Amino acid sequence: MIDFFRLIRETYRIFEAGLSRKRLRALRFMPLPLIILSFGLFSSFNSSPSFQIGLLKYNGGGDWYANLETSLPNLIKFSNENIKTNINPEQAIVEVGSPELFNYPLVHITGHGNVVFNPEEVTNLRKYLVGGGFLEISDNYGIDKFIRVQMKKVFPELEFVELPFSHPVYHQKFDFPDGLPKIHEHNGKAPQGFGLIYEGRLVCFYDYECDLGDGWESYEVHKDSPETHLKALKMGTNIIQYALMGNFNK
Image 1 (tube, rainbow, N blue to C red):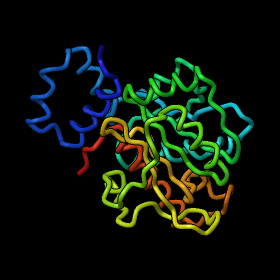
Image 2: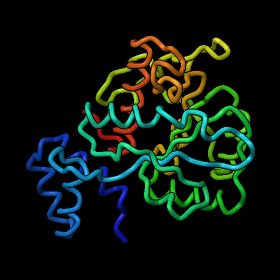
Image 3: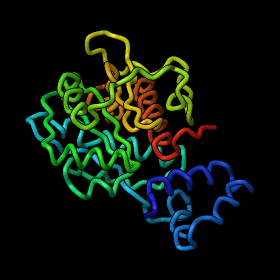
Image 4: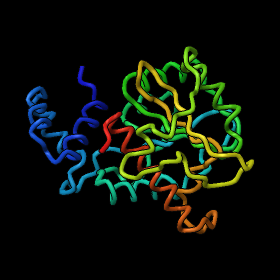
């Protein structure tokens, strides 16, 4: 079976490397139809969006829709303009247990309240992440005590670990030598970037006491300064780039 998520990451590496000889040699091992498909994923001359980012809709009563209007659309626009991705400008809304989850190489979850995954959703989300998908969790002040319990159902063998500032997710297109930027105050704590690492691969990135999702929203929503908004968009773009490229960075 072809790992579509791996194909996306390899294609991005090819374009970032400027079609180097090494990357071109790697194409010999791809079936011709997939080579043709893959060049459309990031090509700036392809007018049709190649894929979407999904917003996870969950049960439990929490507001999965907290940043629905402008957050992901603004991030997608910034990413397309700055790292030449070809992401559909419209976010997808996908339920945790839906088979449609596997259509999206990256999904985002946020909110302020309770989150509940039923057994079928737990199984579906684990298969998605183990199979190459990527989950970004944004702490919208209140989700922490709920999302940690639910992710423990998905990966009972794993713990969230704080990622060092040297981790590649902080050093993609944009450099964040001190880790996550502070977007919203919440409890006044320092922002932390946590991860779930499965068999050596970061499958989930969790921005805690940071609130990137709020930072991506348009000015009229939270009245963030242009500097704060830009920092949030840059860090979000790093996450997209990392999710698509794995451990490769410039």
